[in-house]
Length: 53
Image 1 (cartoon, rainbow, N blue to C red):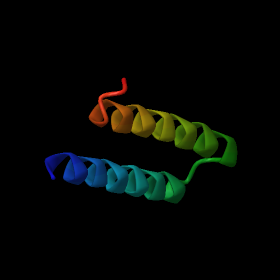
Image 2 (image 1 turned 30 degrees about the vertical axis):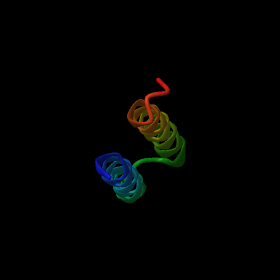
Image 3 (image 1 turned 90 degrees about the vertical axis):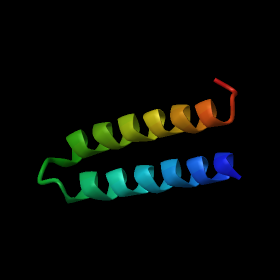
């Protein structure tokens, strides 16, 4: 059960950070780069919880 809660919290944090990045007053290219970085970090974090990485 703790694993499921950790995965859910990580997923919600990723969604929140992506939303906040979308609100930043920066140009589209920089937003896209930041989004990709956040998604990569989030996927690595989720893989860590699943003990794959």
